[in-house]
Image (cartoon, rainbow, N blue to C red):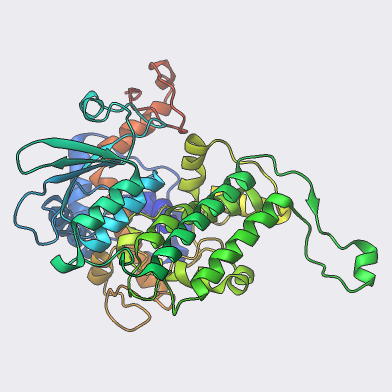
Amino acid sequence: AWRLLVPLLAAEVNSFSSRPSLSSFTNFPTSLAMSTTTDSWETLQSAASNTPVGSALDQESASRIAGTGAAFVQNKLRLFGADEKPKLTLYRDHAGWCPYCQKTMLLIEEKRIPINIELVPMRSYGDKPESFLRIVPSGLLPALLVETSDGRKQVVTESQVIMELLDSWHPVEDGFKQMMPSEEDSASMQRYRQLSNLERELFSWWCTLIFRPEGPSFGSPGMLGKLMGKSSEPAMSGAMSGFLECLEKVDNALASTKGPWFFDWAEHPTMIDFIYVSHVERMLASAAFWKGLDLRSDKYQQQFPALNAWLDAFEKRECYLAFKSDYYTHVKDIPPQYGPGYDGGFEDDRISFQKNISGKDGKSWTLPLSFDDDVQPLYRGPPLPLCALEAAGISGDNGELASEGTSYEKAEPEQMAEACRQMAGWKIASNGSAVAKFAARGGPEGSRNPRKGFGAELADPYAQSDE
């Protein structure tokens, strides 16, 4: 729900005690007379913590530090009831941009594996610390540090290897969820390998569609074709056709099970689901932004019903939502990792989606906000952490308070808006000094600060603020 949170930051920090409606934000102040001293931020943070949502988030933050809270992108310890400090340490990216770190974390959360977590910058937005490079000279993420019983330490890289090792070290016999087919189940193992190959095929088609010039479009029926009764579907390039045909294979694979996951023997997502979802998430954002292809629209809900049901199921799980990014984040974090995306596809929709995602359509980032978003529906699952929804007294569409596994499309807009304002205020006040320092780089003296270039837009970890 960051689309709701970000535009509401200014309004919320201006007055934590007010309870304006969505429409009241039309007159929010154009500038805030706010000191950036530590005392003023502490005052705002105290005020934020006195709201119901802020108080709940304070408690949740303390739980996360202790390793007992809910899934969160910057958690550094996960205990899941373990009494001893874990012997495993996962190094993953700080900002939550890396799809390979994401799928590894989804496995850890779903299996509830006790683990330490160290956060390391990706090269696109920072330098890796020497302490990490001494352990992992290649700098690859994710990386798993294993401490053996005799005190020796070993490092494992490559997400697929890490995931399979973690799964094998935490078997069903010890109370952990099954993530891989049984070795004795030859049919399921064959399906797993076929699905893995299909995921690589889908990834290849995605790269071809997004990161290369698209080429000419074919398939328009023309006047003669129309007279002969052929389809009036819009023309598309070979890359677009190949991508959609591969998605159809994925949809068929999902439709072949009772749903929503790739395997029937589990009522939870398994290894292959995690392998797919981190890149499919990025496909959704990039296809909409650079190609005008909204795979979550009503049209593609009908064309790929099993794929969309699978995505719906993921978006109702709090541990997935903890690592899921919005489209704007992805269209900014994808180019530094994969290269620039090329405009193409369905031009009218592409222009419309780009304006929506970038906040340039005059409404998607403009107050008062609509309750939902046309391109990125917010309420197919919990739009805020469950602790925040519980504090705000918001129930899911199943009638249960702060419930996972359900949508929130019937939530009362005013009640949801107030909860979002309180969380927005708490978020910015909790990190206020850093926010102010970052923003102050844009002052008249800020450009004189030394810069070190990074691939990610705005990445500038060594710059000093314009005091």
